[in-house]
Length: 268
Image (tube, rainbow, N blue to C red; front, side, top):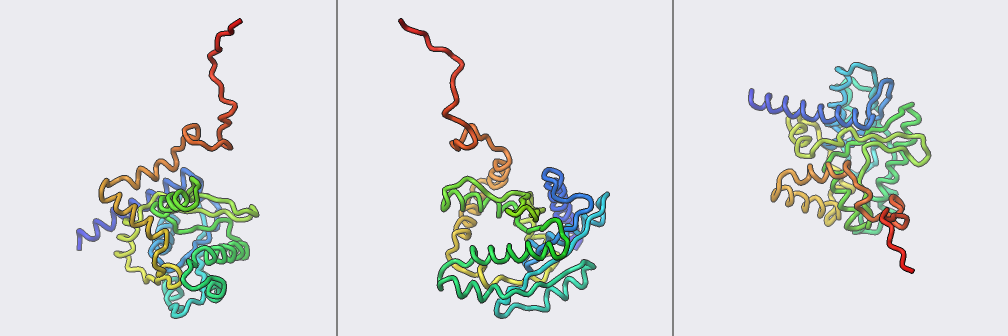
Protein backbone atom coordinates (compact mmCIF):
# COMPACT_ATOMS: atom_id res chain seq x y z
CA UNK A 1 0.00 0.00 0.00
CA UNK A 2 2.80 2.43 0.90
CA UNK A 3 4.56 1.65 -2.40
CA UNK A 4 1.34 2.29 -4.33
CA UNK A 5 0.78 5.58 -2.52
CA UNK A 6 4.37 6.63 -3.20
CA UNK A 7 4.09 5.75 -6.89
CA UNK A 8 0.80 7.63 -7.17
CA UNK A 9 2.32 10.69 -5.54
CA UNK A 10 5.21 10.64 -8.02
CA UNK A 11 2.89 10.31 -11.04
CA UNK A 12 0.58 13.05 -9.77
CA UNK A 13 3.53 15.37 -9.14
CA UNK A 14 4.97 14.64 -12.59
CA UNK A 15 1.70 15.29 -14.42
CA UNK A 16 0.99 18.43 -12.40
CA UNK A 17 4.50 19.73 -13.12
CA UNK A 18 4.06 19.04 -16.85
CA UNK A 19 0.73 20.90 -16.95
CA UNK A 20 2.30 23.84 -15.13
CA UNK A 21 5.24 23.83 -17.57
CA UNK A 22 2.95 23.79 -20.60
CA UNK A 23 0.90 26.59 -19.10
CA UNK A 24 4.02 28.69 -18.48
CA UNK A 25 5.40 28.02 -21.97
CA UNK A 26 2.19 28.76 -23.85
CA UNK A 27 0.06 30.92 -21.54
CA UNK A 28 -2.63 28.28 -21.10
CA UNK A 29 -3.92 29.13 -17.61
CA UNK A 30 -3.94 32.76 -16.53
CA UNK A 31 -5.35 34.92 -13.78
CA UNK A 32 -9.07 35.57 -14.19
CA UNK A 33 -9.66 32.73 -16.64
CA UNK A 34 -12.98 30.92 -16.67
CA UNK A 35 -12.06 27.60 -18.26
CA UNK A 36 -14.59 25.19 -19.71
CA UNK A 37 -13.15 21.72 -19.08
CA UNK A 38 -14.54 19.30 -21.66
CA UNK A 39 -15.27 16.00 -19.94
CA UNK A 40 -15.95 12.99 -22.17
CA UNK A 41 -15.89 10.31 -19.51
CA UNK A 42 -12.53 8.95 -20.67
CA UNK A 43 -9.31 8.69 -18.66
CA UNK A 44 -7.72 11.76 -20.27
CA UNK A 45 -10.48 14.26 -19.50
CA UNK A 46 -11.00 12.90 -15.96
CA UNK A 47 -7.28 13.31 -15.32
CA UNK A 48 -7.27 16.80 -16.78
CA UNK A 49 -10.12 17.95 -14.55
CA UNK A 50 -8.65 16.39 -11.40
CA UNK A 51 -5.22 17.93 -11.95
CA UNK A 52 -6.61 21.34 -12.90
CA UNK A 53 -8.59 21.31 -9.66
CA UNK A 54 -5.41 20.39 -7.79
CA UNK A 55 -3.51 23.24 -9.46
CA UNK A 56 -6.42 25.62 -8.84
CA UNK A 57 -6.22 25.02 -5.09
CA UNK A 58 -2.49 25.81 -5.00
CA UNK A 59 -2.13 28.47 -7.69
CA UNK A 60 -1.03 31.97 -6.62
CA UNK A 61 -3.81 33.48 -8.75
CA UNK A 62 -7.53 32.87 -9.22
CA UNK A 63 -9.19 31.07 -12.11
CA UNK A 64 -12.51 29.22 -12.42
CA UNK A 65 -13.29 25.77 -13.79
CA UNK A 66 -16.57 24.69 -15.39
CA UNK A 67 -16.89 21.00 -16.29
CA UNK A 68 -19.01 20.33 -19.38
CA UNK A 69 -20.07 17.01 -20.83
CA UNK A 70 -21.74 16.67 -24.20
CA UNK A 71 -24.30 13.84 -24.08
CA UNK A 72 -24.45 12.85 -27.75
CA UNK A 73 -27.31 10.40 -27.16
CA UNK A 74 -25.33 7.30 -27.98
CA UNK A 75 -27.39 4.15 -27.30
CA UNK A 76 -26.59 2.71 -23.89
CA UNK A 77 -24.80 5.83 -22.67
CA UNK A 78 -24.91 5.73 -18.83
CA UNK A 79 -26.39 9.18 -18.23
CA UNK A 80 -26.11 9.03 -14.45
CA UNK A 81 -22.35 8.36 -14.22
CA UNK A 82 -20.95 11.84 -14.86
CA UNK A 83 -23.55 13.81 -12.86
CA UNK A 84 -22.99 11.49 -9.89
CA UNK A 85 -19.22 11.86 -10.15
CA UNK A 86 -19.21 15.62 -10.70
CA UNK A 87 -21.61 16.29 -7.84
CA UNK A 88 -18.98 14.86 -5.49
CA UNK A 89 -16.13 16.93 -6.96
CA UNK A 90 -17.18 20.40 -5.80
CA UNK A 91 -17.06 21.84 -9.32
CA UNK A 92 -19.60 23.71 -11.41
CA UNK A 93 -20.79 21.40 -14.18
CA UNK A 94 -23.26 21.25 -17.04
CA UNK A 95 -24.52 18.29 -19.08
CA UNK A 96 -25.38 19.37 -22.63
CA UNK A 97 -27.77 17.07 -24.49
CA UNK A 98 -27.45 17.10 -28.29
CA UNK A 99 -28.36 14.13 -30.50
CA UNK A 100 -25.31 14.21 -32.75
CA UNK A 101 -25.31 10.41 -32.80
CA UNK A 102 -28.37 10.29 -35.06
CA UNK A 103 -26.89 12.90 -37.40
CA UNK A 104 -23.64 10.96 -37.74
CA UNK A 105 -25.45 7.69 -38.32
CA UNK A 106 -27.63 9.31 -40.98
CA UNK A 107 -24.82 11.08 -42.84
CA UNK A 108 -21.97 8.54 -42.69
CA UNK A 109 -22.31 5.30 -44.71
CA UNK A 110 -22.01 2.09 -42.72
CA UNK A 111 -18.40 1.02 -42.35
CA UNK A 112 -16.97 4.50 -42.89
CA UNK A 113 -15.12 6.41 -40.17
CA UNK A 114 -17.41 8.68 -38.16
CA UNK A 115 -14.71 10.66 -36.33
CA UNK A 116 -14.49 13.60 -38.73
CA UNK A 117 -18.17 14.58 -38.72
CA UNK A 118 -18.59 13.76 -35.04
CA UNK A 119 -15.69 16.02 -34.04
CA UNK A 120 -16.94 18.91 -36.19
CA UNK A 121 -20.43 18.72 -34.70
CA UNK A 122 -19.02 18.43 -31.18
CA UNK A 123 -16.65 21.36 -31.69
CA UNK A 124 -19.43 23.65 -32.93
CA UNK A 125 -21.62 22.83 -29.93
CA UNK A 126 -18.80 23.32 -27.43
CA UNK A 127 -17.88 26.69 -28.95
CA UNK A 128 -21.49 27.82 -28.58
CA UNK A 129 -21.78 26.54 -25.01
CA UNK A 130 -18.52 28.27 -24.00
CA UNK A 131 -20.07 31.58 -24.98
CA UNK A 132 -23.29 30.83 -23.12
CA UNK A 133 -21.33 30.01 -19.96
CA UNK A 134 -19.05 33.06 -20.29
CA UNK A 135 -15.94 30.87 -20.52
CA UNK A 136 -12.95 32.49 -22.21
CA UNK A 137 -11.05 29.22 -22.68
CA UNK A 138 -11.96 25.64 -23.64
CA UNK A 139 -9.71 22.88 -22.26
CA UNK A 140 -9.40 19.65 -24.25
CA UNK A 141 -7.77 16.46 -22.96
CA UNK A 142 -5.33 15.73 -25.79
CA UNK A 143 -1.94 14.56 -24.54
CA UNK A 144 1.55 14.24 -25.99
CA UNK A 145 0.84 10.89 -27.64
CA UNK A 146 -2.21 12.37 -29.39
CA UNK A 147 -0.05 15.21 -30.69
CA UNK A 148 2.62 12.87 -32.09
CA UNK A 149 0.01 10.53 -33.59
CA UNK A 150 -1.64 13.48 -35.32
CA UNK A 151 1.71 14.55 -36.75
CA UNK A 152 2.16 11.18 -38.45
CA UNK A 153 -1.49 10.96 -39.50
CA UNK A 154 -1.13 14.25 -41.35
CA UNK A 155 2.18 13.24 -42.91
CA UNK A 156 1.10 9.75 -44.00
CA UNK A 157 -2.47 10.46 -45.08
CA UNK A 158 -2.68 14.22 -45.59
CA UNK A 159 0.68 15.21 -47.00
CA UNK A 160 1.08 18.03 -44.48
CA UNK A 161 3.53 18.63 -41.66
CA UNK A 162 1.25 19.62 -38.78
CA UNK A 163 0.09 18.24 -35.46
CA UNK A 164 -1.99 19.77 -32.63
CA UNK A 165 -1.13 23.16 -31.16
CA UNK A 166 -1.11 23.70 -27.39
CA UNK A 167 -3.27 26.79 -27.87
CA UNK A 168 -5.63 27.70 -30.70
CA UNK A 169 -7.92 30.60 -31.55
CA UNK A 170 -11.11 29.54 -33.35
CA UNK A 171 -11.71 30.80 -36.88
CA UNK A 172 -14.23 33.38 -35.68
CA UNK A 173 -11.78 34.64 -33.06
CA UNK A 174 -14.22 34.11 -30.20
CA UNK A 175 -12.84 30.97 -28.55
CA UNK A 176 -9.44 30.00 -27.20
CA UNK A 177 -8.79 26.26 -27.10
CA UNK A 178 -6.07 24.99 -24.75
CA UNK A 179 -4.53 21.57 -24.22
CA UNK A 180 -3.20 21.42 -20.63
CA UNK A 181 -1.96 17.81 -21.05
CA UNK A 182 0.27 18.80 -23.98
CA UNK A 183 3.45 17.57 -22.26
CA UNK A 184 1.87 14.50 -20.58
CA UNK A 185 2.37 10.91 -21.75
CA UNK A 186 -0.63 8.65 -22.13
CA UNK A 187 0.97 5.87 -20.09
CA UNK A 188 1.33 8.20 -17.08
CA UNK A 189 -2.28 9.37 -17.47
CA UNK A 190 -3.47 5.75 -17.62
CA UNK A 191 -1.59 4.89 -14.43
CA UNK A 192 -2.97 7.96 -12.64
CA UNK A 193 -6.53 7.21 -13.81
CA UNK A 194 -6.26 3.60 -12.66
CA UNK A 195 -5.29 4.56 -9.12
CA UNK A 196 -7.94 7.30 -9.03
CA UNK A 197 -10.51 4.69 -10.15
CA UNK A 198 -12.39 7.10 -12.40
CA UNK A 199 -15.78 5.82 -13.65
CA UNK A 200 -14.64 5.46 -17.26
CA UNK A 201 -17.30 5.63 -19.97
CA UNK A 202 -16.22 4.00 -23.27
CA UNK A 203 -17.03 5.75 -26.56
CA UNK A 204 -19.30 3.45 -28.55
CA UNK A 205 -19.49 5.80 -31.51
CA UNK A 206 -15.92 6.12 -32.79
CA UNK A 207 -13.54 4.59 -30.27
CA UNK A 208 -14.78 1.08 -30.97
CA UNK A 209 -14.39 1.27 -34.76
CA UNK A 210 -11.88 -1.12 -36.30
CA UNK A 211 -9.11 -0.23 -38.73
CA UNK A 212 -8.96 3.46 -37.89
CA UNK A 213 -5.89 5.16 -39.32
CA UNK A 214 -5.11 6.56 -35.86
CA UNK A 215 -5.09 3.06 -34.38
CA UNK A 216 -2.54 1.98 -36.98
CA UNK A 217 -0.34 4.99 -36.17
CA UNK A 218 -0.70 4.32 -32.43
CA UNK A 219 0.43 0.72 -32.92
CA UNK A 220 3.42 1.85 -35.02
CA UNK A 221 4.53 4.36 -32.38
CA UNK A 222 4.19 1.80 -29.58
CA UNK A 223 6.45 -0.56 -31.49
CA UNK A 224 8.98 2.23 -32.02
CA UNK A 225 8.90 3.07 -28.32
CA UNK A 226 9.62 -0.56 -27.45
CA UNK A 227 12.58 -0.69 -29.83
CA UNK A 228 13.99 2.64 -28.68
CA UNK A 229 12.48 4.03 -25.45
CA UNK A 230 12.35 7.79 -25.52
CA UNK A 231 11.70 8.06 -29.24
CA UNK A 232 8.19 9.49 -28.72
CA UNK A 233 9.58 12.12 -26.36
CA UNK A 234 12.18 13.09 -28.98
CA UNK A 235 9.53 13.44 -31.67
CA UNK A 236 7.45 15.61 -29.32
CA UNK A 237 10.47 17.81 -28.65
CA UNK A 238 11.06 18.14 -32.40
CA UNK A 239 7.55 19.59 -32.82
CA UNK A 240 8.61 22.63 -30.77
CA UNK A 241 12.12 22.80 -32.23
CA UNK A 242 11.44 23.53 -35.89
CA UNK A 243 14.03 24.67 -38.44
CA UNK A 244 11.96 26.10 -41.36
CA UNK A 245 15.04 26.68 -43.54
CA UNK A 246 15.77 22.95 -43.42
CA UNK A 247 12.35 22.05 -44.84
CA UNK A 248 10.82 22.96 -48.18
CA UNK A 249 7.85 25.26 -47.61
CA UNK A 250 8.23 28.24 -49.93
CA UNK A 251 5.59 30.12 -47.94
CA UNK A 252 7.84 30.09 -44.88
CA UNK A 253 11.15 30.63 -46.63
CA UNK A 254 11.62 32.53 -49.90
CA UNK A 255 14.03 30.01 -51.42
CA UNK A 256 13.93 31.72 -54.84
CA UNK A 257 15.35 34.87 -53.33
CA UNK A 258 18.22 33.13 -51.54
CA UNK A 259 21.52 34.18 -53.05
CA UNK A 260 25.11 33.60 -52.11
CA UNK A 261 27.13 36.66 -51.12
CA UNK A 262 29.99 35.43 -53.27
CA UNK A 263 30.18 37.33 -56.55
CA UNK A 264 31.10 35.35 -59.64
CA UNK A 265 33.99 36.67 -61.69
CA UNK A 266 33.01 38.70 -64.71
CA UNK A 267 34.47 37.47 -67.98
CA UNK A 268 34.90 39.84 -70.88
